[in-house]
Amino acid sequence: MPGRVELLPDLITRVVIPSRRPVHDVFLEVPKPPAGLATREFVLCVQSDMGTLDRSALAARVLGLLRAWEVPPDRLAVVEGIPRGDRMVYDLLEPELRGAEFVPFRDIWRHGVPVAAGQTWISTRFHLHLLASAAGASGVAMSVSQDYYAVKHRSLLDLGSNWTMLDAAGNDVPDRPDSGGFTSAALRACQDAKLAVAEKIYRRDPPQASAVTGNRAARYRRLAGWFRID
Image 1: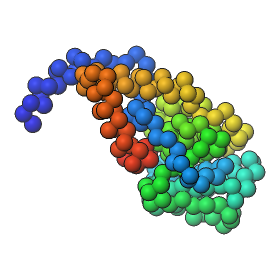
Image 2: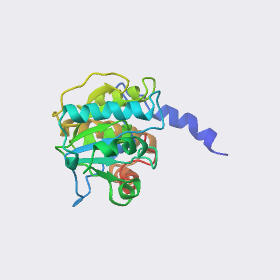
Image 3: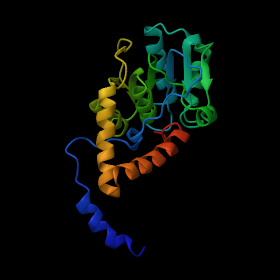
Image 4: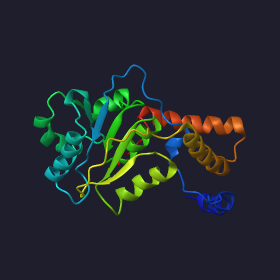
């Protein structure tokens, strides 16, 4: 479109490539855990839309972890990050997890992610790793793809999520993590890094910059922190 080409060189000259790893837009204002939302001690999200393992292998891998940690099913929630895609593995696990709560995507859309500090998560989804660790939850990031999800999960570990990385195709069983998620200092560092980029792009005074980032954060809050989950 006319005007965009002329603006591009000016934008490039204003944005300095950061020396540290780029951070996600969610860090502009990390969504707070929804007030009054019931939560369980353990939370699971396992996808079936990517990776080389079939659903039965993923189900067996997850069940092995849950049994090793002696997780009571009535203290477990299974969340659906993407409709249907995150239900299929649970369908195989359900007979072994009587008493677990399934949280469908529509409930997450309406009420938010049931996350709280002190929880323990197992998640193959990057954005649920981000949101849960930002809320202070411990967890295992289980990668279903070494050339895609392993890289994405590792980026959060490098920023300070404190989660344990696990290959879905492996057979190792880590201890239940209890280190929590991001510290307040790590969250502030991520937010400062993202705000610095936003201010360079938009050239706003501090009050205006806050309004811009606040509007963007409101959109993220509406979707519990993401538009596309992976």
